[in-house]
Each structure stands twice: as structure tokens, then as C-alpha cells.
Amino acid sequence: MFTRSELENIIVQGYPNIAGLIPKLFEALDEYVWRCEPEANLLADFLFSIGKPLVPFMKEALISQKLFDVRHYLFSRFIFEWPFEFISELEEELKTISITNDYWNQYDLDAIKVLVVNSIGNQIELLNSLRNKKKDAKLELLKCVEIEPQIMEEYFKFIDNSSEPVSINDFYHYFYKDFDSTSEEFLQLTSLIARADSYNDYVKYIKHIEHLQVERGIT
Image (tube, rainbow, N blue to C red):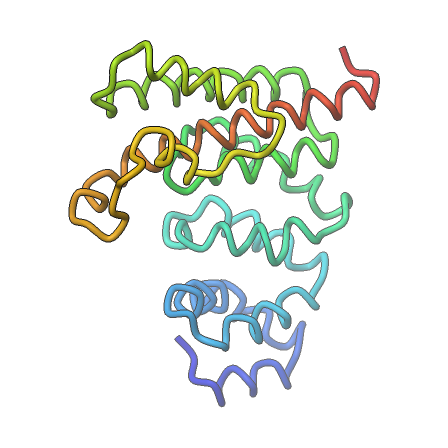
């Protein structure tokens, strides 16, 4: 990772003078984000300013296991803000990420959002993929929860029919009204948390895609 002064010197040199350092800068960005260092925003702003020449490096970064933990940041600071011209070149990588079942990080949902918003790829297939993810998340959730199936079905119906976005807190309030979120028991349920959160988000985004498809006349 670069020191603050080293990073500032790199920024002063600018692109394309520092082109050979870009892979290392992505690794540094990962470290900064992981440690919540203020240099993360400084470096992200600089990389964003490079524009289209950054796309080939982003293609590699998206599928790099070294940078797996910083994907949300790459989506929020770069890809969600990029124009279609840039994003269209990431189609293969985004599709690869979108087909994974990533209950914990939900990078798959990030990728699907980008593909849908930019109308990249087969939109019907994306919607069906999301519906399958919802089914898988439901099955995984049932494996993790020691609750009567009938009660779980009531919860799923509650989520599916909710007209408002549902947060993970609704899951706890629905089943664990006196649940202590600071307890050791809470920490042991992280797998359950991830699956419930994924199910909620899949349901929410399925509704969003269905609405978009109606607006776009896609059947």
C-alpha cells in the first residue's frame, strides 16, 4: 500500500504516466477501503478521472479474487456512475458475477442491477435468474432456521406481498421480538442473516425489474 505522500505524488504525475501502476493502485484501493482509510476516496476520485482507459483494468479487477472484498466499492464508486459506453465493455464480467449465488456479499445483485438498468443482455433471462435465486435463498433459509414450516411460509408471504421495501430487521421482529443483537447467539446466526437479507433483496428487485419491463414493453 502506498503512503499518503506517495499516493499524492502518483496523482500529480497523472495518467498516462502512471498507467503501469494501475493494478497496484487497485490493490491499494482494496487496502484503503478495508481499513476505512481516507485515502480510499482520494484514490477512487483519481482513478475515476482516468475515464475509459480504466475499463480494461476494471474488467480484471471485477473477477480478481485478490479484490473480491472491494467489489461493492467498485460498483458504487465506478460502475454505477459510468456511462453505458464503459459498462457495455464489462458485459462478460458482469454476467459471470450475476450467475453466482452470493448470499453474503450480494455482488450478484449488484451485477444484475447494472445489467438491467443499462438494458444489457437478455432481460427475461435476468429476471428468471433472479427468481431462481429467490427460490434457492428460500431453501437455504429453511435449512438454517429452526422454525415451523408453516410459520416460515407466513413470513415468505409477508415479504412477497409487502408493498414497501423490507429490511433484515423485519425478519428479527417477525420471529425474535426479544432478540438481543449484541448477544453471542446473534453472532452465530450470520449465515441465517445473509440468507434472509438476500431473500428480501431478491424479492424487492424482482418487483423492480417487473415494473421496468412493463415500462419498456418487454414480455
